[in-house]
Length: 405
Ligand SMILES: Cc1cc2nc3c(=O)[nH]c(=O)nc-3n(C[C@H](O)[C@H](O)[C@H](O)COP(=O)(O)OP(=O)(O)OC[C@H]3O[C@@H](n4cnc5c(N)ncnc54)[C@H](O)[C@@H]3O)c2cc1C
Image (cartoon, rainbow, N blue to C red; front, side, top):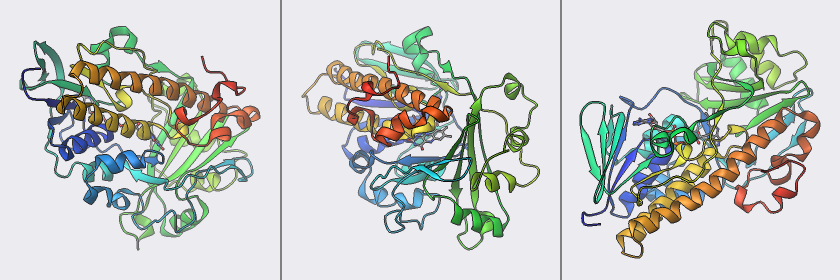
């Protein structure tokens, strides 16, 4: 490698920003770009659990110390509140089926997190990756606006609908559509109902499964004004066996969800009943991608985060794995900078970890998704047996009654 090490990061989601912060902390030259013209309006929450130590390594201490500001409720101290866990209930009676504990677990609002993690990073917005050119000693990223950036290596941290993934893998990059309808939408309640819901629900993760093969989660997204419950934003995630009409465009999925609420108990019953009139939502495509080995072109192009492994959200592992990838990628670049490894060696080692870990978790999460829609077998599922631990920490997973191929 004749030119100095320079990393091109495609995408400023959690993974891209965590990489940028880690490279900056270690004095490694980099550039981040994103196709959005400014941080996006799509928003949800993620559960950060086992990835804490990696985040602590990547972020400068002043940003790591501000994780509370990334939370939906910045004042929530989950340890002090005694809620370092997630809860799964029987949706038909509201009783707890399992409440896996996890020390330091916390919720992060993805939009707030991106805003805070981009501090000190010069994200170039409005740059859509359109081509990747390989050169003798690196790579050039070309954008739709005609501009370009040169570097030694490009990491595609460009999300589940990655552009870099098909560039690397062609048809093998195609996502698999799972047979569930997926809805995800935010709303506010009246002040009185917001206060009641805030009391009724678990503040980290509160999800219910129902014998009629349906899943609902009620979550807090943001408390813009702690003293005004009418400003608090909640959101619902729901999945059920896929119906083609759900995806035909005109169906309002909030009305469809309300129609399906027979036999549900609180907090889910009230969570849906109380959604104000006029809220509209469409069904969201429910896709996964299980990684398979890619040719990293001599260490010049690779993937991280959802681009490298798109999993269902039902075990809450996507962001944790995205952070882990970022930490592994930064370590790989440190090894290149110090001369311990060549770029090709470092990226090969990185890819092996990402592909192995990602492939396992995409499959375990898919099995969890099936189990959440199969009430009778739920007690055999990965969450029942192993909580929200990382897949590679799970012993004997292949001995469970679920199957891993
Ligand atoms: C509803 C929901 C709930 C979830 N819950 C959890 C949870 O509880 N716990 C958990 O761990 N995970 C959860 N996840 C998963 C988690 O959100 C993702 O794994 C994580 O955010 C992935 O981050 P990323 O940086 O890889 O991708 P993204 O956040 O998708 O970022 C990709 C970025 O790349 C940019 N981009 C895309 N294409 C291009 C291009 N061609 N050129 C330039 N830029 C481009 C995009 O604009 C975007 O900003 C959930 C996901 C969803 C949808």
